[in-house]
Image (cartoon, rainbow, N blue to C red; front, side):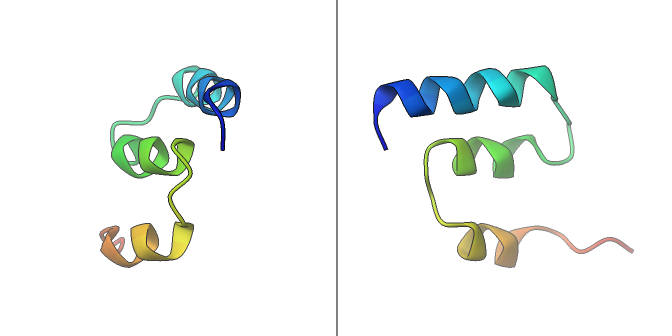
Length: 45
């Protein structure tokens, strides 16, 4: 992943901000794999 891809991912993230999922989507924007992030995401009640 290069700086251009990260910038594009961040622009998409800013367009659809969500207080509940922001940190997880931010980590994904920087190219971290989804599975470890999904494991730590709180489950809906």
